[in-house]
Image 1: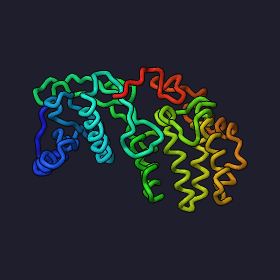
Image 2: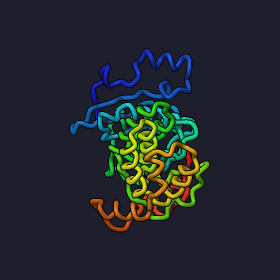
Image 3: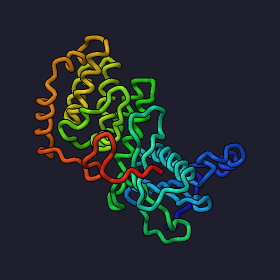
Length: 299
């Protein structure tokens, strides 16, 4: 698929790329050329050129909503860095890495699939999709949500955190976990990869805490109910942490002090549009502290 090359198509200008080639050859901006191309349905096709000369396959995102352009570019840079350092992402392979922020509590996971592109400029490009998904599943909303949550967790300003967490929930409201899933996760150094991928728990619990900090106690309590509904098992762990934190005994604290987690979860799930027993997604079925029954291929 040919496309015009204009100033707004290029993510990194030729002059900027030359700078990185001279002064920081390992930077993803030096490793490839990146293009952002509008698609017919109003979304974006974001891809790179040149990795094949470095022993790796070129990568692409399709169906990117325009409001997620910046996140797509950030993720593309990160994945190109991984592909280069680990000698490529294998066709049909999975990746799992913590590349957005230091100390993040979950890995960002996904899968790369071969495309049918045959033109000289884009042949052999691999499409990034959500973990275990196919080309037909399109835009990797779970991966993007995880990236936003990791950014929010690392942010210092609670208002900025609120914006990022809400953006993550807009793109992926999350599925329901099994009732006790997450109850055995270590609260001190948790691995939330499976729950994040399945339920977007980081966005719910993080947003509640950010709202509390901003003095929005009523909203914090409402979001806490949503968080409990998504992952009751992890909510039990979080309640213990909140009650032992020594924080102010405000409305948020009192809510967690008296909440019946099972009752909240059952009521909210029964009121959900797709009510009924929670079913884990195929990609993470059977997960505990890992992220699924598929082999964890770290690249």
